Image (cartoon, rainbow over all chains, first blue to last red; front, side, top):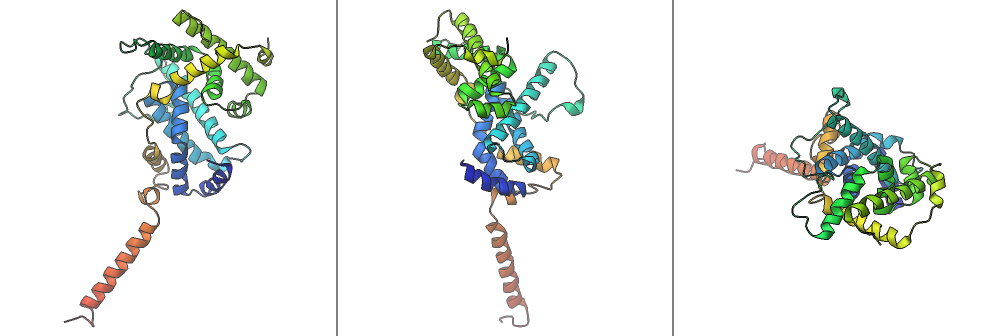
Length: 198
Length: 93
Protein backbone atom coordinates (compact mmCIF):
# COMPACT_ATOMS: atom_id res chain seq x y z
CA UNK A 1 0.00 0.00 0.00
CA UNK A 2 1.47 3.40 -0.97
CA UNK A 3 2.07 6.24 1.50
CA UNK A 4 -0.69 8.32 -0.18
CA UNK A 5 -3.16 5.47 0.06
CA UNK A 6 -2.12 5.00 3.68
CA UNK A 7 -2.70 8.70 4.41
CA UNK A 8 -6.25 8.56 3.06
CA UNK A 9 -6.89 5.36 4.96
CA UNK A 10 -5.57 6.81 8.22
CA UNK A 11 -7.90 9.81 7.92
CA UNK A 12 -10.86 7.44 7.67
CA UNK A 13 -9.56 5.17 10.42
CA UNK A 14 -9.30 8.07 12.85
CA UNK A 15 -12.99 8.74 12.17
CA UNK A 16 -13.69 5.08 13.08
CA UNK A 17 -14.79 4.20 9.58
CA UNK A 18 -15.50 0.47 9.82
CA UNK A 19 -15.10 -0.19 6.12
CA UNK A 20 -11.74 1.55 6.11
CA UNK A 21 -10.67 -0.61 9.01
CA UNK A 22 -11.78 -3.76 7.23
CA UNK A 23 -9.75 -2.64 4.20
CA UNK A 24 -6.75 -2.13 6.47
CA UNK A 25 -7.06 -5.62 7.94
CA UNK A 26 -7.33 -7.14 4.47
CA UNK A 27 -4.32 -5.15 3.25
CA UNK A 28 -2.07 -6.13 6.14
CA UNK A 29 -3.36 -9.47 7.45
CA UNK A 30 -0.92 -11.67 5.53
CA UNK A 31 2.11 -9.60 6.49
CA UNK A 32 1.11 -9.33 10.13
CA UNK A 33 0.30 -13.03 10.41
CA UNK A 34 3.61 -13.94 8.74
CA UNK A 35 5.62 -11.72 11.09
CA UNK A 36 3.86 -12.97 14.21
CA UNK A 37 4.17 -16.58 13.06
CA UNK A 38 7.90 -16.12 12.51
CA UNK A 39 8.29 -14.63 15.96
CA UNK A 40 6.11 -17.13 17.83
CA UNK A 41 6.46 -20.26 15.68
CA UNK A 42 2.99 -21.60 16.42
CA UNK A 43 0.18 -21.08 13.86
CA UNK A 44 -2.69 -21.12 16.37
CA UNK A 45 -0.98 -18.64 18.68
CA UNK A 46 -0.01 -16.54 15.67
CA UNK A 47 -3.59 -16.32 14.39
CA UNK A 48 -4.84 -15.31 17.83
CA UNK A 49 -2.09 -12.75 18.25
CA UNK A 50 -2.42 -11.32 14.72
CA UNK A 51 -6.10 -10.64 15.41
CA UNK A 52 -5.10 -8.92 18.64
CA UNK A 53 -2.66 -6.72 16.71
CA UNK A 54 -5.51 -5.32 14.64
CA UNK A 55 -7.69 -4.80 17.70
CA UNK A 56 -4.86 -2.73 19.20
CA UNK A 57 -4.49 -0.83 15.92
CA UNK A 58 -8.20 0.00 16.00
CA UNK A 59 -7.95 1.18 19.60
CA UNK A 60 -4.79 3.22 19.19
CA UNK A 61 -5.13 4.69 15.70
CA UNK A 62 -6.04 8.06 17.22
CA UNK A 63 -2.60 8.23 18.82
CA UNK A 64 -0.74 7.46 15.57
CA UNK A 65 1.27 10.61 14.91
CA UNK A 66 2.22 9.87 11.29
CA UNK A 67 5.92 10.35 12.01
CA UNK A 68 6.57 6.83 10.77
CA UNK A 69 4.99 4.71 8.05
CA UNK A 70 1.69 3.05 8.97
CA UNK A 71 3.24 -0.36 8.27
CA UNK A 72 6.11 0.40 10.66
CA UNK A 73 3.66 1.42 13.37
CA UNK A 74 1.62 -1.77 12.88
CA UNK A 75 4.81 -3.85 12.99
CA UNK A 76 5.78 -2.14 16.25
CA UNK A 77 2.46 -3.13 17.81
CA UNK A 78 2.94 -6.67 16.51
CA UNK A 79 6.46 -6.98 17.89
CA UNK A 80 5.42 -5.65 21.30
CA UNK A 81 2.51 -8.07 21.50
CA UNK A 82 4.82 -10.92 20.47
CA UNK A 83 7.20 -10.03 23.30
CA UNK A 84 4.36 -9.98 25.83
CA UNK A 85 2.94 -13.25 24.54
CA UNK A 86 6.35 -14.96 24.57
CA UNK A 87 6.82 -13.84 28.14
CA UNK A 88 3.38 -15.11 29.06
CA UNK A 89 4.01 -18.46 27.38
CA UNK A 90 7.35 -18.85 29.15
CA UNK A 91 5.71 -18.15 32.50
CA UNK A 92 2.89 -20.57 31.72
CA UNK A 93 5.34 -23.30 30.71
CA UNK A 94 7.29 -22.91 33.93
CA UNK A 95 4.07 -23.42 35.87
CA UNK A 96 3.84 -19.98 37.39
CA UNK A 97 0.49 -18.29 37.73
CA UNK A 98 -0.44 -14.88 36.42
CA UNK A 99 -3.42 -12.82 37.53
CA UNK A 100 -6.43 -13.79 35.43
CA UNK A 101 -6.94 -10.31 34.02
CA UNK A 102 -3.36 -10.26 32.74
CA UNK A 103 -3.96 -13.25 30.51
CA UNK A 104 -4.63 -12.50 26.86
CA UNK A 105 -7.84 -13.55 25.15
CA UNK A 106 -7.52 -17.06 23.83
CA UNK A 107 -9.26 -18.95 21.10
CA UNK A 108 -9.97 -22.30 22.72
CA UNK A 109 -11.23 -23.96 19.58
CA UNK A 110 -7.99 -23.39 17.75
CA UNK A 111 -5.81 -26.43 17.79
CA UNK A 112 -2.07 -26.07 17.85
CA UNK A 113 -0.41 -27.54 14.79
CA UNK A 114 3.05 -27.59 16.27
CA UNK A 115 5.81 -25.14 16.97
CA UNK A 116 9.53 -24.58 16.55
CA UNK A 117 10.20 -27.17 19.23
CA UNK A 118 8.88 -30.03 17.09
CA UNK A 119 12.15 -30.78 15.40
CA UNK A 120 12.17 -34.55 15.08
CA UNK A 121 9.48 -35.39 12.58
CA UNK A 122 9.51 -38.72 10.77
CA UNK A 123 8.47 -37.11 7.47
CA UNK A 124 11.41 -34.71 7.49
CA UNK A 125 13.96 -37.13 6.12
CA UNK A 126 14.71 -34.98 3.10
CA UNK A 127 17.77 -32.96 3.99
CA UNK A 128 16.25 -29.65 2.87
CA UNK A 129 13.32 -30.02 5.22
CA UNK A 130 15.61 -31.20 7.97
CA UNK A 131 17.77 -28.10 7.54
CA UNK A 132 14.65 -25.94 7.76
CA UNK A 133 13.63 -27.66 11.01
CA UNK A 134 17.11 -27.11 12.41
CA UNK A 135 16.94 -23.42 11.53
CA UNK A 136 13.48 -23.12 13.09
CA UNK A 137 14.75 -24.68 16.30
CA UNK A 138 17.86 -22.52 16.25
CA UNK A 139 15.77 -19.37 15.83
CA UNK A 140 13.74 -20.34 18.89
CA UNK A 141 16.96 -20.63 20.89
CA UNK A 142 18.07 -17.07 20.11
CA UNK A 143 17.47 -14.35 22.65
CA UNK A 144 14.13 -12.68 21.75
CA UNK A 145 15.64 -9.23 21.13
CA UNK A 146 18.20 -10.74 18.76
CA UNK A 147 15.58 -12.88 17.06
CA UNK A 148 13.28 -9.93 16.33
CA UNK A 149 16.08 -7.86 14.75
CA UNK A 150 17.24 -10.79 12.63
CA UNK A 151 13.74 -11.65 11.39
CA UNK A 152 12.91 -8.03 10.59
CA UNK A 153 16.12 -7.66 8.59
CA UNK A 154 16.80 -11.01 6.92
CA UNK A 155 13.27 -12.30 6.43
CA UNK A 156 11.09 -9.19 6.29
CA UNK A 157 13.80 -7.23 4.41
CA UNK A 158 13.26 -4.03 6.39
CA UNK A 159 15.81 -1.22 6.55
CA UNK A 160 17.90 -0.65 9.67
CA UNK A 161 16.05 2.63 10.14
CA UNK A 162 12.64 0.93 10.09
CA UNK A 163 13.87 -1.78 12.46
CA UNK A 164 15.13 0.93 14.80
CA UNK A 165 11.69 2.56 14.79
CA UNK A 166 9.91 -0.72 15.35
CA UNK A 167 12.12 -1.93 18.18
CA UNK A 168 12.95 1.45 19.68
CA UNK A 169 16.68 0.68 19.45
CA UNK A 170 19.43 2.88 18.02
CA UNK A 171 20.54 1.85 14.52
CA UNK A 172 23.99 0.79 15.75
CA UNK A 173 22.46 -1.55 18.29
CA UNK A 174 20.17 -3.00 15.64
CA UNK A 175 23.15 -3.76 13.37
CA UNK A 176 25.07 -5.25 16.23
CA UNK A 177 22.22 -7.52 17.28
CA UNK A 178 21.68 -8.69 13.73
CA UNK A 179 25.36 -9.47 13.40
CA UNK A 180 25.42 -11.43 16.65
CA UNK A 181 22.17 -13.20 15.86
CA UNK A 182 23.53 -14.32 12.49
CA UNK A 183 26.70 -15.62 14.13
CA UNK A 184 24.78 -17.49 16.84
CA UNK A 185 22.35 -18.93 14.34
CA UNK A 186 25.12 -20.05 12.03
CA UNK A 187 26.96 -21.77 14.90
CA UNK A 188 23.88 -23.66 16.02
CA UNK A 189 22.89 -24.69 12.49
CA UNK A 190 26.40 -25.72 11.41
CA UNK A 191 26.82 -27.75 14.55
CA UNK A 192 23.50 -29.51 13.98
CA UNK A 193 24.15 -30.11 10.29
CA UNK A 194 27.79 -31.04 10.81
CA UNK A 195 28.87 -28.92 7.86
CA UNK A 196 29.65 -25.31 6.98
CA UNK A 197 27.09 -23.14 5.25
CA UNK A 198 28.01 -21.09 2.20
CA UNK B 1 32.10 -4.51 24.54
CA UNK B 2 29.22 -2.28 23.50
CA UNK B 3 26.48 -3.37 21.15
CA UNK B 4 27.28 -0.57 18.74
CA UNK B 5 30.89 -1.71 18.40
CA UNK B 6 29.91 -4.99 16.79
CA UNK B 7 28.53 -3.63 13.55
CA UNK B 8 32.08 -3.01 12.37
CA UNK B 9 32.75 -6.75 12.30
CA UNK B 10 33.17 -8.28 8.87
CA UNK B 11 30.93 -11.05 7.59
CA UNK B 12 31.52 -13.47 4.77
CA UNK B 13 28.90 -12.28 2.22
CA UNK B 14 28.57 -15.71 0.58
CA UNK B 15 27.93 -17.45 3.88
CA UNK B 16 25.59 -14.66 4.95
CA UNK B 17 23.53 -14.92 1.75
CA UNK B 18 23.30 -18.69 2.02
CA UNK B 19 22.19 -18.40 5.64
CA UNK B 20 19.65 -15.75 4.73
CA UNK B 21 18.16 -17.93 2.00
CA UNK B 22 17.91 -20.85 4.40
CA UNK B 23 16.32 -18.61 7.01
CA UNK B 24 13.75 -17.30 4.54
CA UNK B 25 12.82 -20.83 3.49
CA UNK B 26 12.62 -22.08 7.06
CA UNK B 27 10.49 -19.15 8.19
CA UNK B 28 8.19 -18.98 5.18
CA UNK B 29 4.49 -19.14 6.02
CA UNK B 30 4.27 -22.32 3.95
CA UNK B 31 6.96 -23.97 6.09
CA UNK B 32 5.36 -22.98 9.39
CA UNK B 33 1.61 -23.18 8.75
CA UNK B 34 -0.79 -24.74 6.30
CA UNK B 35 -2.11 -21.37 5.19
CA UNK B 36 -2.42 -17.72 6.07
CA UNK B 37 -5.84 -17.36 7.73
CA UNK B 38 -8.38 -14.63 6.98
CA UNK B 39 -8.48 -12.45 10.08
CA UNK B 40 -11.29 -9.99 9.33
CA UNK B 41 -14.19 -11.86 10.95
CA UNK B 42 -12.25 -12.63 14.12
CA UNK B 43 -10.99 -9.07 14.47
CA UNK B 44 -14.47 -7.61 13.98
CA UNK B 45 -15.92 -10.02 16.55
CA UNK B 46 -13.34 -8.98 19.14
CA UNK B 47 -13.93 -5.28 18.55
CA UNK B 48 -17.70 -5.78 18.66
CA UNK B 49 -17.44 -7.63 21.99
CA UNK B 50 -15.01 -5.21 23.60
CA UNK B 51 -16.88 -2.11 22.44
CA UNK B 52 -20.14 -3.72 23.66
CA UNK B 53 -21.61 -3.50 20.19
CA UNK B 54 -20.62 0.10 19.47
CA UNK B 55 -18.49 -0.94 16.50
CA UNK B 56 -19.18 -3.68 13.98
CA UNK B 57 -22.58 -4.11 15.59
CA UNK B 58 -23.92 -6.05 12.62
CA UNK B 59 -22.69 -7.33 9.29
CA UNK B 60 -23.87 -4.26 7.44
CA UNK B 61 -21.05 -1.89 7.92
CA UNK B 62 -18.44 -4.56 7.41
CA UNK B 63 -19.37 -6.95 4.69
CA UNK B 64 -21.72 -4.95 2.52
CA UNK B 65 -21.64 -1.50 1.06
CA UNK B 66 -23.97 1.32 2.05
CA UNK B 67 -25.89 0.61 -1.17
CA UNK B 68 -27.61 -2.12 0.84
CA UNK B 69 -29.22 0.42 3.13
CA UNK B 70 -30.50 2.38 0.11
CA UNK B 71 -31.76 -0.74 -1.62
CA UNK B 72 -33.75 -1.97 1.37
CA UNK B 73 -35.10 1.55 1.95
CA UNK B 74 -36.31 1.79 -1.66
CA UNK B 75 -37.83 -1.68 -1.52
CA UNK B 76 -39.71 -0.83 1.68
CA UNK B 77 -41.00 2.38 0.13
CA UNK B 78 -42.12 0.53 -2.99
CA UNK B 79 -44.02 -2.06 -0.94
CA UNK B 80 -45.66 0.69 1.14
CA UNK B 81 -46.76 2.61 -1.98
CA UNK B 82 -48.04 -0.57 -3.64
CA UNK B 83 -50.00 -1.46 -0.48
CA UNK B 84 -51.46 2.05 -0.36
CA UNK B 85 -52.73 1.85 -3.94
CA UNK B 86 -53.93 -1.72 -3.48
CA UNK B 87 -55.77 -1.15 -0.21
CA UNK B 88 -56.33 2.62 0.03
CA UNK B 89 -59.21 4.84 -1.24
CA UNK B 90 -58.04 4.47 -4.86
CA UNK B 91 -57.81 0.72 -4.62
CA UNK B 92 -58.26 -1.02 -7.97
CA UNK B 93 -61.38 -3.14 -8.16
